Image (cartoon, rainbow, N blue to C red; front, side, top):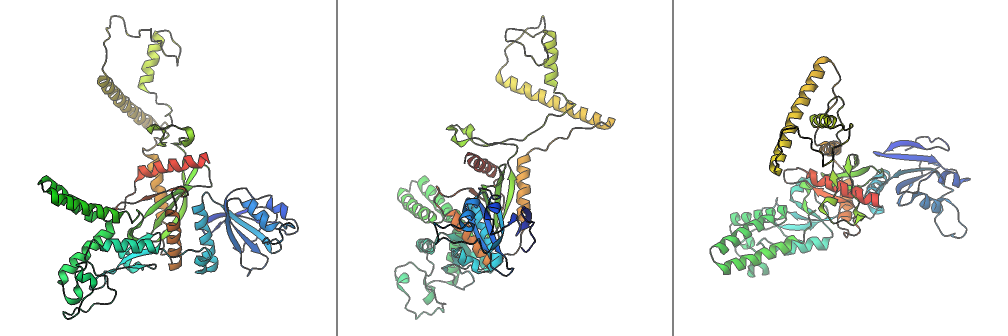
Length: 497
């Protein structure tokens, strides 16, 4: 960050993995430097004359307006922070969303101040529900510092510690897992606790159950946490349906009540709550470039990105048009240029028919004109027959086109390139591969900061949360088509704003 700056001009560089611009600042003539700044959202850094001086790092939705307040002396606002006398260089990077600004600001602060970056941005460690599977008698606790060694047993993040504790308490009411926090040494003479008397615990403290029975209950709790209650719901729904089929309506009603209880507990955990080792999310945000959408990948406790996804070749609908039709949703189109030197067989036949009727090239016959040959009778064609005929003509023209391409290649002529199908899907897969290729073991500070940023953005009210998020399935596959539709919606909202 100590590169020399050309006086009076901008210089582009790569700073902390992000494209940055910087200019020199002269305190005697601040307007000359401020006039070069754009009125756009950005993350900026102000550097002093001394190399050891701490920089000022901030974010703003309007770069020029913010720095004019900081770097232009004002007699009317004498109590306002004034940094003009100390600043010698301005560096900034344009951002397309607040999420990108927060992530970039944290990266800059973390490189400059280390662990203190968490305090400067007020990033508290999110709460997790941790399953202590390494204990001989497992139990669950709420923690803010899940370890990577037991990432398979840490479930979250939750919006707050109170939300995590409420989920843990309501979930334990569905099972008979112990709630005591000390290490157990089972003894039949132990009096037990109130939970064992209320039949809410298997009471392993005084050997109220076998170790195999408690291990079975622990496994059920672990599966409940890993699937956000889906494992329990599948069993209860199957039992309810079976009881209903056997006309056992009282049992079916009792099982239905249990299903409702499990669904109520499941609603306390958002879709973001997953095992930390399996938390993989793709976040779409508006980009600083008008023809791109910023893509972020959260994997292994670390946020990566942004990577620009080009929206060229996509038809972006206007959400403010007022249309409620299903066709108003963004549709991904694959641009296929017309292949030179290969003419469509149907167009050739149409031109021949037009010449016989005395029409010019490109002119279509009128409905009153009969293009059938003399002596040939016409008969109505059903839609199914017309569709079958179109398929046969398309296949024949496609085969003829391939034969012409092979003939051109054998003659040494240039064959027009044929674009692959699924161009947008391939573009998205390339973007995901590029983000996954930047994998690295994050430090504890980076992991905590990125988890806190993800938790802060995700649990905002829907009206204030910009962008969209998508999760990988159990096999690690991404919903490609849903992501492309999300890209279209993000791009449409960015264009409308």
